[in-house]
Length: 139
Ligand SMILES: [Zn+2]
Ligand SMILES: [Zn+2]
Image (cartoon, rainbow, N blue to C red; front, side, top):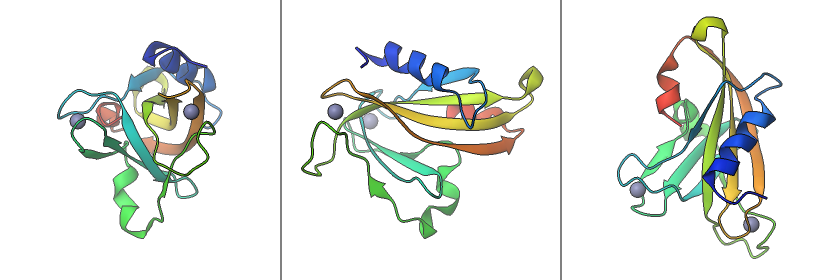
């Protein structure tokens, strides 16, 4: 259980990404309004996650998730605390495993905290293998 986004960030760091150490964690904040509560949808088999701001409705693809979104079959993420299938509210944090000397992003992992019950969850991780550190700003 996590009391807030600090606990979520610590969780994301501890969990790693694709088995590698996580070096940087970004707690997701809406670029438009600054809210930190989101609905989450994704295609976990294809490794893509989109978050929707509960404050203003802005949609954002996490890291490189948007590249193949057109061929994805995203599902709405729900928490165990609510079995009725309604969309739930999450804080979201992205863990980044970096290459030596911060030469790029090796892998990322998407984690969340259910706002209703505090449950910390690990949605998906995937290999990125890019030298593009801009992904750190696309959590
Ligand atoms: Zn917003
Ligand atoms: Zn919950």
